[in-house]
Length: 416
Image (cartoon, rainbow, N blue to C red; front, side, top):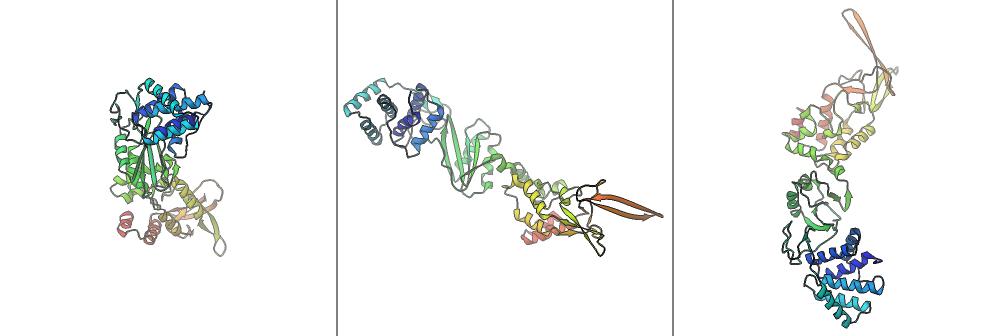
């Protein structure tokens, strides 16, 4: 039993990749050793990462017998591809001296290793699939197996800036297109995790819109991850907007799509996902409180709670905050131009909300109407206001558009 399997395996991998690469034959021998000694796959991967990291040094592990076995396996893997360079030779010589093995003993051990060296399945550096010992090309991905041209990584170097998308090889229909797009990105990497090849695309601009074509191809695939400025983000949270965004891109008039005009459910915010439409039954018209005004204090004045409106808006739009079509400055301007107060009794553009029973914060409203010699009295409870028509909607949005210098033709098309 090897007491420390990770550095034990890392010693072998370090010498094997001393020339900068791990060939298919070397990878195959490493996998065969893992199985022979029943090392955990997690320890195996950790050892490859350690060897690749650049900080690991050849370290004697365990008893003298363990150290000799480690040297034997180092020789086995290093000679598996008939390509032993000076760096590998020097590392082997240094390790031999560190455990007390003289050159004569090393030569004898090397002869034994070479005489008993058996070909094992080659492990493709590109996709991780086993191939026969005499295979020249991978039976799955077609990559060459005889030349050590692929520097095999077992983890990505996550870019500290920009947007990075990683995904595993897949049989999904979108995979070939995704791989093509990834290779066309600002920075492309690949690595081997387990027996799967993973790919990473990097978009230095940091704009999610640059990554959207790739994201579309990855739809329905499970093995995918996202990094923004070096930090891993939740895929579904960040890309919650993609379906809606694609609808925007194919809409006849995109600006009308976002403002809900295509569905006759207008909103002020420029995003229908806000779910805060300009309708008589919208809850956000009840965000505020009643104040008494007038000489006798018998007039009701509604004061909007703009902080609550902003909170509701931010909460509803959080999942879609990365949408490239969202204009957060517009939402701020709109809230600013919403009237501070409304007097529904005297303002023809507003009326009272109606409830048939008392609710917290509601006031009792009594309205009297005369007609045909009769007087009608209508009493109800009100906990907010309701807009009458689109006059105020147009005024608010026009001011916001003007402040943000949104093209006049866009405003006209939306408001006409």
